[in-house]
Image (tube, rainbow, N blue to C red; front, side):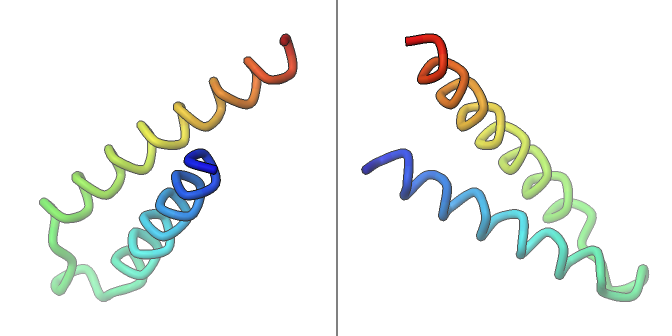
Length: 57
């Protein structure tokens, strides 16, 4: 159940990130972009590791 919630949070972060990238360059917030990308990559990695652990077990 918690992995499902984590997946939803991860998708939400990436959707917010895509919307930030779609803004004109002068309106983009660089700090927000860095934080969202870092969090999205970290959570995606966690989901991927969990997926491969389920395949092995």
